Image (spheres, rainbow, N blue to C red):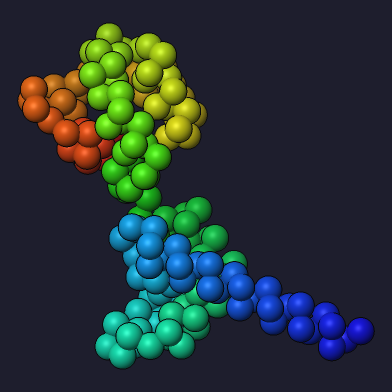
Length: 159
């Protein structure tokens, strides 16, 4: 029974590490393949020098001990919470498909499209968010030909 439990635990750790590596590699985030957290801070230099998956797995494993969750929650150990809008692929797609209506809603300080955007972004205080986007509309939508990516980057810089 101990062998079975040990095998399941090892497979679980390796599977989790593999998924975390793929997320860092293909997720388009701004962190190394091991993600942010203590593991990234300890092993980032080694993995970038040798491009060795062993260092990345060690980083992911250290992050998986709970230090990664703590770092993300508190914004420490290189887990910077900025870039919330621009780094979210779902928000990028939504903004790209609804840019004109999003601009209209932001200029009015509310509307269905802005409400849906806030839901996707996980905004907890919608009235404050709506007021902030309306007050900073000219800084978010900087021109007539602004792209969705620029809008989201501007939101990250301002909000």
